[in-house]
Image 1: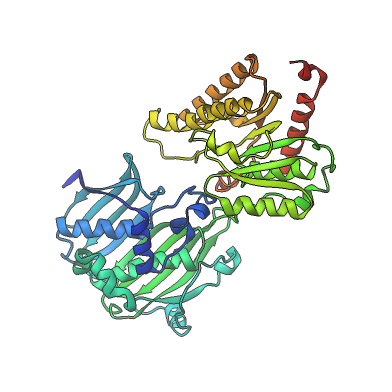
Image 2: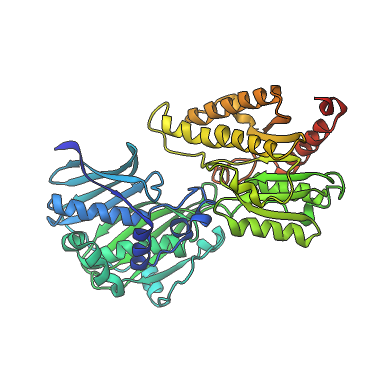
Length: 490
């Protein structure tokens, strides 16, 4: 029989994340830390894939006779499930040989899994698991960050039985269908990927498992890395224990983006070339905003950088600048809120505004155009920008010079970015109209190449130019243009 039937829908919340972290031991920041997750490819906290899988298994166990000798489990996680999104479980097909299901968000498939029925397989302990079990199991307090070379040699084991009773209480129907030990072991695979290998910020990709009986009472699950694909950063592992035998794949993250240090920038920037500028950088706690803050501060500007959630990041940027003799302050500012009260902490009205505010750009696409997504971009790139410009001008009679960046690739109209491109086009029109107004604004709508930031860090094989080599001449050109005699007369 083949059909698609929605069985249940659930929104995983922060409390659910915490509960599964206790069960599985997986406290990877990509799941648990909003500030840390925004600097990953996901851009925001994501649901543990194995949590969603076990929830689906629990629902299926109530609706379908899984206890009829399930012998295999396969799963592919294809998209991120962000915390707070509505995740739907659909039954795709069920036959005597197999049950297939999928998880969707906004009608987009984010995971597919299947349970096979048949004759159980036997799986004698392999050489790798015999060696692994002699190495012992230790508590894991924080996610590891091994290099790709280090991953090639990883093997070991994770305790399972100690958490099986609590996991069975959380997923009672699944535990009844496939045994509590297997449910606990599936949860622990999340810990293996998120805390051991590949470790911090990793992405669970897929698994292929046989349900076996001879090691069902084993108190550990053994693992062994079998392959590391350095080009695509894919790690493959074999696992055995607690009634499971098979393999899994995960993506190892690229190292976090670190913008050029103040000391390095000082080798390229004169200490007075931006002197006299009072600068407000919206979105200056990371990425190109962070780099801009460092360049201008090294050049003698007084800098204020804003943050929304990344206060620690902003304070670290300011500390690095101030420790090297620069002048940098931090300000909490949300472009989605009215600017008035938020600007009350500004000690000086800025002479220059740099606008790097942006939501998470990469997103699932379910249609050619999604009005809600378009409005989200508009709130950042159009409404928030306009409100800030008007509010700043209301505080001063001086002209305000504004640097408004957009990536040059918008001219090529990349596929699946309709809403982003439309909002950026609207922002370009707004910049032109504000320049034609009598508000005392001088806006430069700057085209930039695609540079290395948190949002571009996940692009496989991308050779991106040096951010400093691209930003420094752009900033110099901007300052020269707004200080020219012709510009001063406008």
